[in-house]
Length: 314
Image (tube, rainbow, N blue to C red; front, side):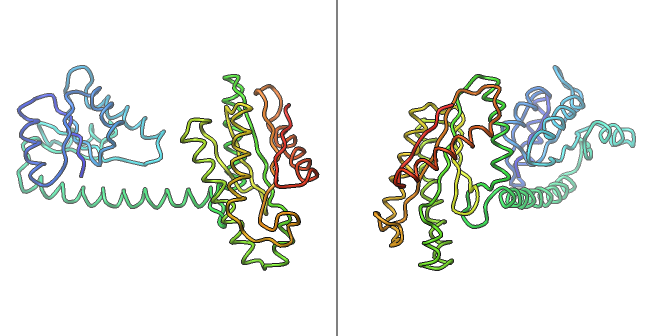
């Protein structure tokens, strides 16, 4: 268990660290409340043992600020146990009201301390499992069940947030709309199971390109989503014209390299896609206009022969 020990008295801190380490715990020491807050945010401990009277910032104030910080994070709650010189009822009341969960006397016996740490270790394990379960639920709520890309609902929420940031900072913005060419004919020829497998392969290729674009620093915070059916969207906050064009070209090439047979896709014989894009400097216009412009460009790409991309600047 990772324990943050907040104690300004070096002798007490050294003794407590030695005892806790002998139980198999990983202990980090903070000398005052301010250091405790910084360390907590950086290391995310499983347990905080908090002294009360300290220079710079006392334990009550530090605990209150830790609880405020926790409220902004995705992980829920970390036990904070106050270390006190006495174990009176008044001490317990003060500890709870300050945001703590319990208190321990600094003169606690070895056996009782060991037992307390065993109980808190079980709580830390359950908390870790709960965090993992919550993350899985969050991913399920935000991901498309077939392709694993973000779903339409998550995309709509995130686009609005990113658009607001772009407006505030006068940044460019780009949207790509992708449609698998002649996909209905693919389903009719090969069956719906093959159609699902095709969409999964297309989604993986798109995600790989998006990852490359992000990792190479061509554009940051790029993400892909399943827009509906055989249609996908790539959202590129802060993208230059060159970056959005490069992304579209890479996706087209990635799908060609898959070489998925599609005999009903005339002229090509493999699965291909058409892409319509829109890029603009963020303005007072609605972000929905970007999607409309990208959709119009997608139509032109299909009319122009498919397996290609077109852009509409607005």
